[in-house]
Image (cartoon, rainbow, N blue to C red; front, side, top):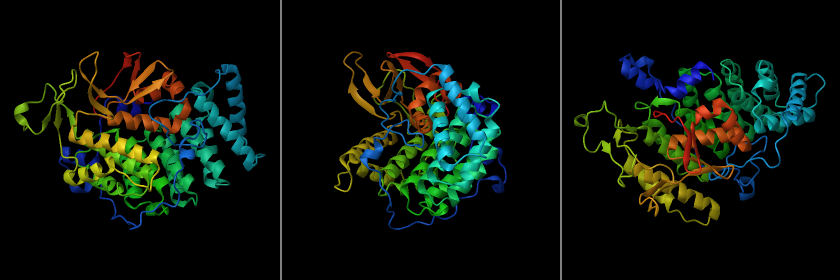
Length: 461
């Protein structure tokens, strides 16, 4: 992994511009400017909903950035191909991608789909090393030309898979501006959404500086606060959802949001009234993350005398190993109003939504409300007692891998990291998690058969 990303993942030293300005006592001009006033539509309707059939689509779909059920990672079916077979196929596809002179739109679609399929199912860093620059240039040509929606979205997905397979400090500079042009100028809503997701991946893994990360978070917040008007996609749920998800993903790289929490929470709280469940869930999960980031464990350097009893939070169930937390700053001043909205969604019952969507909303917002009221509780926290240990179960959100592997997601930052990785890797998540150091360092937690196989979990994300 390159030095910048290693620093961000391991030391957690990225701080927001406002927090940095305050700590350095610099002039107000160095702080990040506020977002432009949002252009908000009263209707907030979506022109395209997502059917249950679409939501149950194949995780290995080469054009997809969606995430299915969090409860299990889907591993590609069938025996693994010998490396000589897929490596040979990949070499052929790379050659075809780089030679565009005699290619057709349909031919490029087929080639890009095969390239994405191989890079998703296999960890192929050695096979593409040294060719990343040429490949990225070829993908950007397809993205710029936008000859067909399918070719464009496949090129965007190929770009994201190349970055996550073989990160380079040069990719962000090459790809960021073209992706933003596509987000703004494309007439295709799915293409805009795919480009937003790729921008998040490119920023996270492609060599973005601290300022680049914060700048793109501001850009994404503009999309969200304007309900898509900022990118000529008014009231479209898909790009707004994508922007919320990638903002949350990138915010896990920022340690200190103490001076920048109020505005995004307010923007996300406003999105809770959306008519689309995907927008509401993405907004709610990001709100939970921002509240989580306002707390940190009580350390040996902290003097309890410096904090009021209200600032120090202990686990109400006194679960073994759960540290007391200190509220370092107020994430949002109108928490009482926010919790009313969260409570309403946690008990929602309406004929407007499918039973599946209602269940997802109720489950998710019950978790979010629980975490905000009890900061030591993570996603899917249960207070029921385990008969074997006599302790509460705690966070029971797990991802099952290969039948016997279990990854426990007990923090909201871990959930955002997992979702961000799965949006790109789809059914190849397991392969990359096991073999791709970049992916493992992004979410360094693995538990097998109830025992920790490896855990290099660091606080501060």
